[in-house]
Length: 260
Image 1 (cartoon, one colour):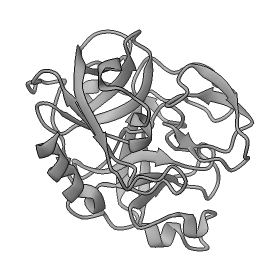
Image 2 (tube, helix red, strand yellow; image 1 turned 180 degrees about the vertical axis):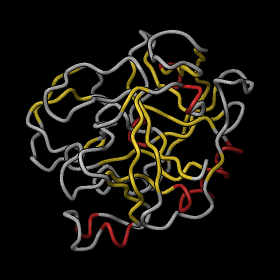
Image 3 (cartoon, one colour; image 1 turned 180 degrees about the horizontal axis):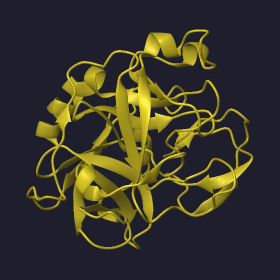
Image 4 (cartoon, rainbow, N blue to C red; image 1 turned 60 degrees about the vertical axis):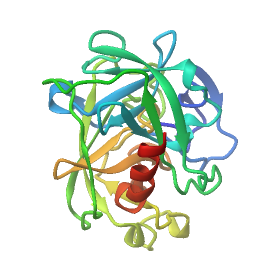
């Protein structure tokens, strides 16, 4: 993800895909899967890879109907639809499945790169995609699950926080547990009031999303409940992963899916 990560040197994907950068702030927030395991696209058939024309992966996303992908706003800032491709139905981001061009994109006009509120965007695919065993649409959550609900986050992002300089080719998954935003913003964790009401957190010790996972799915009860957004570091103690809360942003997603 682009998720804001506390880093000195890391592989910066997302807006800086494929470059190595120095974070100016030790608590700069970036995208983050750590502590996960290899999985298959058939187990998570809604997962897609957002790619450059060259085939390099820069963010994740979730297929919600025959031609619409939900991702993070920060993945789309400064991007042109004509420069983005989406790979669907493949366990590996660099081959197989179906690779489709993007016709148009939009992200929430309330998105703030400072607060990371409203971190949601949409891509309209240039062609209709039918469901198969490896490609499935996912339902949007209507309610945020209660704290403690098990959820799974998937992606091709970095497998470690500091020294991993290449992305895994095989899709990774990890089980984490929902922390509703008010609790995530409490003294129990390290964020304080920078966690806001358009966000939901998910936490498990030594497990998390990481750079390159941005925009990807957090799924509970077979519904999309979160969009990988940001976090301090990857899998750091008492710093949960922070996600755009799909239930809170659902009306915007539905409205602009029809307008896009």
